[in-house]
Amino acid sequence: MARTGGSRRNVSRTGTRTSRTAVAAALAVLLALAGCGSRGRGDSPAGRWSEADLRYGAAPADDLGVTLQPDVVIVRGGGNAIRSVSADGLTWRIDAHAPGAGDLAPGKVMFVTERAVGRVLDLAPDGDDLLVTIGPVDLVEVIRDGTLAGSDVTLEDPIVYAAGDPFWAEEPSASSGTSQSVGLVSGRYGSAGRASSASGAVSAGGAVSAQAAGAPQPEPQRGGTATSRVRGYSVYTTCCVPGVGARFSYDDGGVRLVGTVTLTTSRPTASFHVAIGGGTVTRAELEIGGGFGIKVDFEAAISDGVNHAKEFQIPADVSFPIGQLAGIPISFTVSQTLTVQTAFGAKLGSIKGSGEFTLAGALGFGYVNGQVGPRVTQNFSRVSSLINSLTGVPVGVMGLVIRHGVRFTVGIGALLFKAGVYFGLSTSYGATLGSALGAPLAQCRGVALGVHARYGVGYTILEPVVTVINKFLSLLRPIRALNIKPINPSGGISWTAPIYTAEEVIPDVQLCGHAPK
Image (cartoon, rainbow, N blue to C red):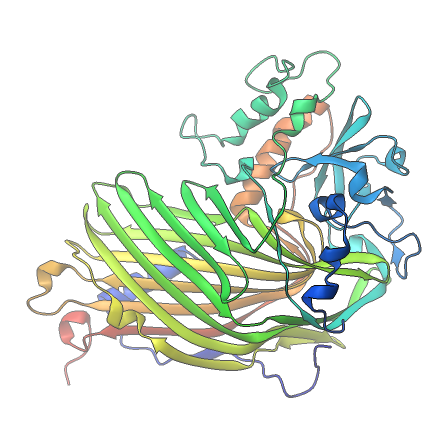
């Protein structure tokens, strides 16, 4: 179990800052803008699941050891009651004759499996099936009273759930200043000949056709790797030994980027405890062990290109099934986000760098008796220097910020709509390289490193993703004549804490902003 005693320290350390310089100021601006018992492989729940359970998640037990909220509707049949799920994760096609399916209605919480759970926004019959559009729920919107706990769960035998091509991962349309979701809505509803206009109006009857749910998600794969295309980036994700990482590349003809960000770890384990009483979280603890570090490498260049800032959810989850606790099927899920912001001060130039640091022996937090705080056994040290590695041929100042987010969740839900106890770590790497035109005097180099944690019980969704989904829902509302409320970017209780921050600028000369000695 995660410990509540004094052996875990709340950590918030700030490295020694150098004097403010032109390079350091650029870094600051960039960062502001970028903003239960041990289980081995042999007894992994995934090894005992059916093919349907592996694809769509396991079902809750007939006899639960928790009390659900009164508006939760359990649809029996588990993965066998699910026909498909759309790539965007919003629409689940289920058997209309499955026990409990007839009780579904907008506003209810559907619970078919650990992955197929969410607030019903819309449902429509399609032959012998129901198409159910869901939104996120907090854990206490599912469980009213109960406890979920586990200790030293070994995270082995990962299952990768890739979204495929969800509309929320598409690049926004440049025309009319509207989201690409406008065209995708008409595409989703127009593919069966039911759309009467580009606005997505549905012809008489209004029933959502078989194509309305869009392309289904790909089948899950074992092995911990996935390839995605998001916001113009190609991303290859890995988990979890030797770490949770993302290899990314981007090339629009004017700006070219390639890099890798990794939260390194060895053999991760998880311990957790969540107690809910009367629909309120009374205790929440999560600890992930295995030793952690951070690592980055990148190359960037511009040739008559345009700077950009992009933040996105990587549409692939890595899941470790834990099994049923008190009759509720849960998993340990790893998800990642990526933010890349360029600030190239000229139309021509390049920058390259790499660095690695140890971070902590364990990550986690505790919320007990009204007291909350991170539990991070810090072990920060430099393995290889990022600032000493910076090279390039910049005509003007070259600036780049890369932020890598890794979130560990123990609970229920899928992709965007995961609910449970979680710990997220966001690592920002900022790098600036002064113009080569000043190199005969001194070429200034600067780096900034920031590691922050967000943890709690509930769910969080990136603002850009929420914006796109809510635009889609706003178009669905008149089509279906429904009172669909916008999705909130977060639900439940959460806290944030700084883990480590530092800045460094070299050389220590007046040209780079330092006072002469």
